[in-house]
Length: 191
Image 1 (cartoon, rainbow, N blue to C red):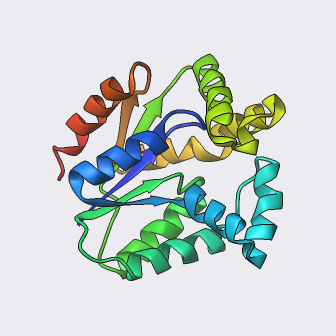
Image 2: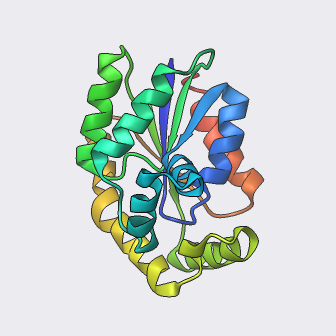
């Protein structure tokens, strides 16, 4: 099994690219954002609690996310591995994810990071809000907070993974197809 982390700030296109990459390489796409939004849509107690946290652009508690991912991995069959989209978001979560994967005889094979200019991120998020109706993409203050949270809490994972030889930056500017080709070129070396 091959396991990839796909990273980038909000609006970098990691969700769009993850779907395509997972299909091409027979990987299970694990989007914690999608998993949490499903809880919110279902109106579960967890969903209501998470809705309040996410509406402020804050991060969901680690233990909740690890538990959701472990459950998904334990109940998935037939894939060549996993593509983690939107998780981990902190070094502590990365360590927890590694521990959980190691307990299952798995590891993180590579961290792909989409590099996108700040102005392009904001433009993409506003456009996404118009297309998808995601409330967290409409408010400029929430957008800036989400980008700041990414820089403060998530970017340190790059150093952590770089020290382990897992970090691979990928130019995230250009068309969806251009970015897909770049990601594809890195991934096919490992799959």
